[in-house]
Image 1 (tube, rainbow, N blue to C red):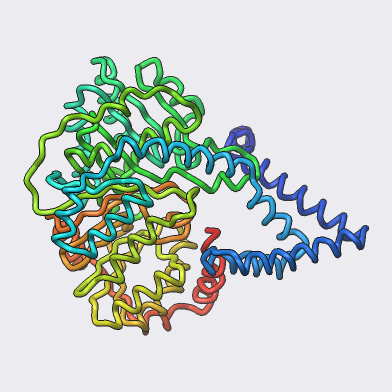
Image 2: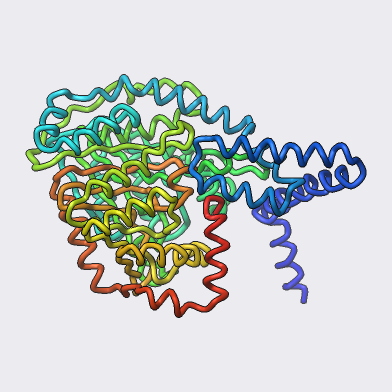
Length: 512
């Protein structure tokens, strides 16, 4: 009995529990305040109803995706007294405005360190006007150039990529920059930590940045502060606070490792044991990632420094001295890029749409979550109707029941338009890959859901014609052998309550 009481006290006093309770308390106070005022003062009640009406007109005329507007309309219908104030709080949030301003300043400042070679653009245009147009868009609106003669390697497995990461870290001479959404205690972190500690002792500059929500509940409270004694500088991005603020939605979902500005990794792999399958959580964890070696790695270096330097003006000598790299003769081009929720430019989604719309033979997609807006559903359906072989691979064993249930609500729409859907039977797909026609591919951190496409900081790299594109396709086709194909009759066989839950969750998918 005493043991149970002590365990209960530990849970109640746990910082995570306290965070949740403080957030619930703030929501409760707001709701009770509105209800109390509306019940006792008719003018206030009428004012709140008028506010909702004005906001409905305003939201209807914004340039936001219609799928993002619908949850607000439904909420105003169900909770008319509270939703209008909630919307104003989200849209006028000072924290988000500050984040937006700082990101814009850093992005503009970094442009001078990312010049585009006119010769490379000419080479790409001579190969394909469509690909050159996409590269020009990413250069102008994503601020990242395209590179030729770069080595790129695709990894179809988290364990393989982690081994490559360790080998490259061991060769570091100047600096090691790491940025991950999730860092969790375990074998993977222990091996990485030991390597970083050794390199720091050798005089290599080591910086580690992690997301304030993704890692918040996975490591001891002051763990990262203690790494400074080992020469490992740590920063948390957007520290999670128990305050009702829309900036808490803007998480750093990127995964970046840069060594000396010459080698960079990105992809779906975080620092936790499930990513290397040394720990089983949702069956076999299917992931993917990539390495780029050469000048393209410098784009990831600048990408890292933009967020590292977000809250101060620390002089970064590293950012002013791109390393000298040796060109590697390849058959393609590489273009790293990032996507920010603060610039009103949905780079990640627009790259996906461009690839889908221009595909001629096939489009293969791996994604852990399938919560699509109208534009993506339409583009995928149109491509399939034109005769393009459109295939999407999703998990058979999900990590989030609501995401899985919502994904099934899209299956019928896509299947009816001749898009083929496969679930990876051994477990969970976490890779975020797309390839088309053996000519273009994307590897990165961008899921096909609203959070990745609209709310998170993300990153990826486009490969134009490189061997890596064929490796992505090869990984997809080999993984198909372990998949279950979903058909229309499977949608009809699902229990009614599961289908109904999917319909409801789909309405609120932009908030999930």
